[in-house]
Image (cartoon, rainbow, N blue to C red):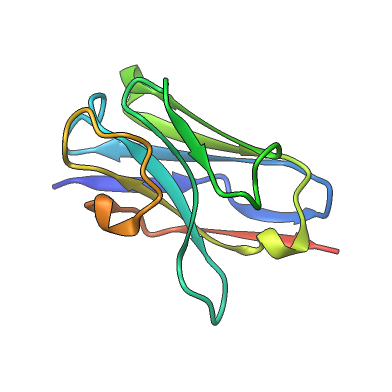
Length: 126
């Protein structure tokens, strides 16, 4: 059974930082793209960042460029999202996602991801 488990969320003041982790189990994703999405209350799930299987290609939503950094450790079957200079509008549930295909790119489309975690809450206070 494939599982993606996010951790690292919490409450932080505006301007602060958090590092989210995503640990995958049940199969290896070392040859698959992994991404991060978020969903705020009353809003649709939106793309945040993604990394290709070898991290050569990364992709970011305009709203987080320059503040967030996506990375991965294929040896640990894990992905990370370093979030700096957090803003209240970053408040959301953050989800990790993984593509079942091999050698995919850093897609921003939810339909390109087959496995999803349960999410971790990030709350940024003003």
